[in-house]
Image (cartoon, rainbow, N blue to C red; front, side):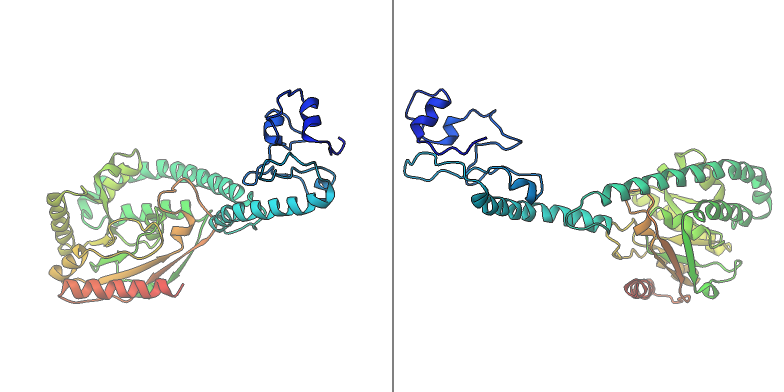
Length: 360
């Protein structure tokens, strides 16, 4: 392609335009006219984006925008103007794309400003791990659920409230599911009350993995779960055999019934477990605590055992239960707290967990 240095009239005739009113390149060339991916319709606010390297781009031509004042379209200017124009375009494009790439790199915790692939690869591996995780948990749950059905009549006869045999099976299920994918570190196991002493356990809530992690402790505490979970095949039925306490959210009567049942269980020697935040944290920050769990502890005069979970939110974030990232989990059991004032118990337990989270 030769360098064009003719007058505007000559250019008009070469492209078949007879009307001399057309004096600019934007009106001369049809929109489909391109050269090697470069559109000649170049305006000061919209220039062609060259996707090749700088060296290869120097052998091509860039459009020089027309000047105001009715001056005809000048010419294609090779290499000398190209370097400056292409450099400006490249800087502009990098500034425009860098924010997008940086965000993606931060989400994936990997990558660099000029690459956008690590995130997709990271997500793919996490999804594969997530699928394998649920395959393992479903496979083990089917066989262990049958075992729970076999021992359940004996549990109702001899251990109706604590149900230690059922929770031992649940510990096996959680351990077999979690061990191939996650390493769990325990700290403060000596702070756990003896199995026969009732207590109110409280913990921060970051992920769906929290339940699996807590079941590996081997304590027969009764969880509180929303009623819709009980409808899930196998898992929901197993929760019923474990004696998990159902709760209808946004139903004040259901909440009162739940607290009464918790008090009855603790009076009869069973332990209960609460997530005082009420829901999973989506940003990893500790939310405000509801006082229901601490009211149960104060009225029944049983200790409150704070537990801090660290790492579950990064491995399986809230709202992204289909993925399983790499990582490890740390479970910290704090010393039991006793008292008769629910508000004081709530503040002490929250401060204990918050301080531990701030140390990670």
